[in-house]
Image (cartoon, rainbow, N blue to C red; front, side, top):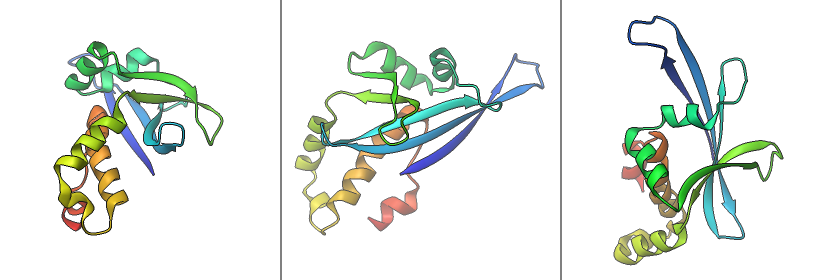
Length: 143
């Protein structure tokens, strides 16, 4: 799964100048942890990578708080497992546990044979919020 997001970043309250920050998102299945993992590449319009402090400025306020306070949610730089280039990886410790909890409380998620689709939609509805990404309502209605 791939997605691309462009975040305008204004400099100063009265400034007309703004830098466009680009974000590429990849969801990759981790065979070792048996869960999906979010990889992201953040860069300026000229292709230069964003610093972690610049990425943090683009995150929704709640996400910044979660990342700074949590011992299990953080972003590190790692080699993308397929592209073999440095990307950022969102670590969400306990993904398997909170997904099991979600599916154990909502039996309807596994009744119509599309468990994987429900799993990914449910996972992304939580993880995507860290970056201000949302699931389109049409996708939720179809599932």
